Amino acid sequence: MAKRLFDLIVAAVALLLLWPLFAIIALAIKLDSPGPVFFRQERVGRHGVPFRIHKFRTMVDDAALREREITVGDDPRITRVGAFLRRHKLDELAQLFDVLQGSMSLVGPRPEVPRYVQQYPAPLREKVLSVRPGITDLASIEYRRESELLARSDDPERTYVQEVLPRKLQYAEQYVEHATLWTDLRLLARTLQVLWGR
Image (cartoon, rainbow, N blue to C red; front, top):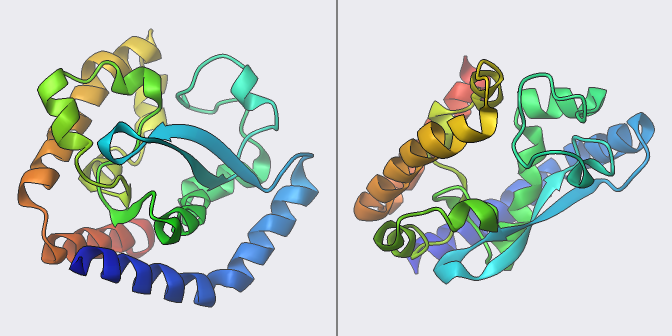
């Protein structure tokens, strides 16, 4: 209950303070390439219930129809504005709407697409999906340059499934087992430090 109240207060205040930034991002996206401002994609949420995540669009409008669901290196689908938004993680700010809606939390295991969730080991799947997915978590911090890592692989999809995903699940399991409001505060502070404190 305290976590949900904390999420609601922080998300509401952040949206009130950040709306001018949201307007600038939306205008930049529309001027840069044709298509909607927001990108929405089905992800698996708490207890395995699917939901549609919000992000500011960083790719060409028909990117979902092209190739893979992971981003690798200098992906040609990424727009000029999208590259800037991704570099500073500004595209993820749209998920504050998902926090208000109740699909997500500020901190929690990052939500995956259904095809990757199907590859979770059964007991681990139940544990990881027992909490709301989050905008940030330890895996987001440790793998903030994931696309660069995958770009060095001969088979990015295999590398993600066999190496990156299992490690992310370990981080998610640790979070579920030790999650407290204090843990969330620390992870939020660390996320801000990594993104803007350098």
